[in-house]
Image 1 (tube, chains in turn orange, blue):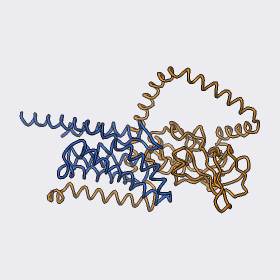
Image 2: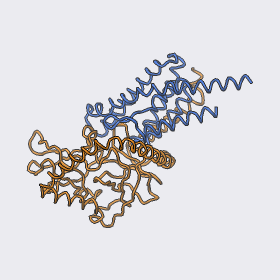
Image 3: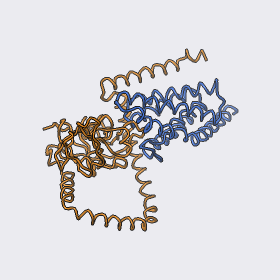
Image 4: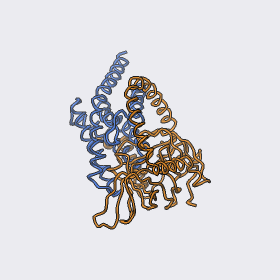
Length: 278
Length: 169
């Protein structure tokens, strides 16, 4: 055993451990993409795309069977949904706001006409419970840059926090490291959405820095305010599901149900280059 | 040696696929981790060199997928693979319960230490991080040993027999 600890392999192991520690410290202190990460990402991205293609194929294949057996159940659900929709139709104001939301979603480019969107497939997603990140199969070769904005059919997803030649990592707005300038559509109250470990598990985030006087109610729609310079204004974030006043009574916080379904993202749209905040 | 490398590379690819892309089971957004128990079992059956190398590659690819502090999983898995091999040679008998025990201890460290670090760097409440990340991660890292242990034992036996036969010739 003593010989082993003096052996070449053990020395190589120690050397590798020291290297890894160095990269970790570099990332914690400076951030950014380290050379080994870029290398691993460039190699892994095509394989991850292939793996996702297989996964989607297998999922789609089995879905055809489960879909057939669950038709009856789906019919009942559809009837229930139609009833719900009829109830929703009665509220004309909400309908109007909803239309505005959909229009904003469909034309984020109108808010920032200089932005072009690139479709990217989600090939890997973090499953360690510490953060909410996704890896996509497009990178700097396709025009994606650090801080490029990512959206999906349901609304804002997040921003690019690491990018390589043919891959990029998107950190979702539910990640505790993320904060986004936000505004409540109905009352124009402004705040900042922040990721929260406990809320993240339910696909929610926190809307902080709302004044005590700000008018926020359940069901309010929240959009990006454009403040902060990373996210253009007018992108749908989510719906207010809960409001809490702080103990000192000077401010209030809200919980937002994020519009984009972050648990089952397949394709997202990333801006060609970062938004310059103008 | 070549067949061993090919065999374990295939095991690595399959488990990596299950840990990062297919993710058969999730609790609070945390997925199953087959690679941890595979690293432990490989360390036990194939000794510390294979364990450390398998752990290093597993950790590097998990680091890329998770995008936390790059290198943390690589370092942790490499050490786990190495220690499993050393323990199997000097302290533990090669048995399922030995693997279960080592996986349990590794999973506890693997789940709690990064969570505490994360809580410190991201200013998140420790209780939340432990409850929503460390606990599910621990719960989903230990059970896969039921699959990884027999699989790697089977592969190890096949490779050992093959080498014995070749040596006999």
